[in-house]
Length: 115
Length: 91
Length: 213
Image 1 (cartoon, rainbow over the protein chains, first blue to last red):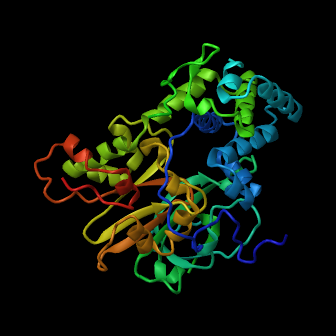
Image 2: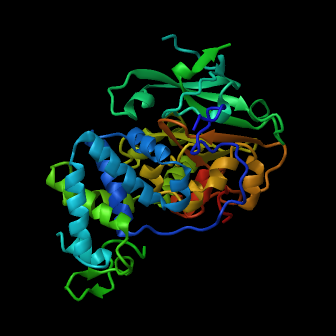
Image 3: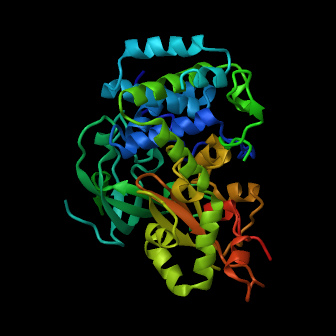
């Protein structure tokens, strides 16, 4: 797809027409806070910067913005940056996700079993 | 790179690279004035791809809303944004 | 805080702390979080203790911190000047750990009303105020605030006089912004703690004003 002639990409929302500002708000779940913490710690330790996080979020495209929650997009971007930085391999990731999913059917079971 | 003084009239360049940038599309080609000088800060266009980054002056540029949106309801309201030096040309 | 990770409703059958948000089906993205975190720990990037400490640090940040800064600026003109000159240093002076965040404080007056948005993502002064509300990250707020700010403010119940200049701040790069709302009338003689209770989160984003006493 040829880029928009104005240079505007989907995340670059300033000036778009959109409906009323939604009033909803929610507290964050533990897994979301952990994603946030891992991203911040990665930055503080110099593994990758928030710019790398944003680059991957932007490249994920508008569909991801509409269909995934905020921290779902963040964990996907965190993982992509970890792979790019060589922190772990795709094979290690694949094996670990499979192992995590085999531990139980709830987040609590899957995260506790790894502790 | 020349550092622009506060008050300097500037225009945001109309570059359209399909990569990670922090200059919003709605401000490209628009004119305003330097509100204050910040930085230097590392170029996010390099950081985003995991590269060592050059330090750049960062400017807060103030625009009249009427200069950004021709149909602005209240043109004398203002909009401030941070723009890195390589995106600005003095007028 | 219903989701504070120290709170739990009891113990799971396996004897581990039980939380409502952990009792729903394990989603793909939750499994990825666990996998990524465990691999990052095993590779020596982070420790579980650091992750827990970072969560504690974020949980400790809240709009109350920003409200304390604003109330101090209302009662102490020298502090107000330092806050407007360097928001991070002034916040740190009050004992708040703002980390590497570079904070600019902008002041509302009779003539000027400031409002903050991030059109490119959702930059927010999180190291002072905690995590942003969901609406701040919404498409509608991010899109419209730079184009029709007064209409957006009206949706928040804020109608500004025509003579007031609205200054929109799009946090596009390295700075974060906090609005110092105007001190409400009738608050002469109130102490700092009582004044801080009038300062809402929304007034520090600029979509509201401080509460009347």
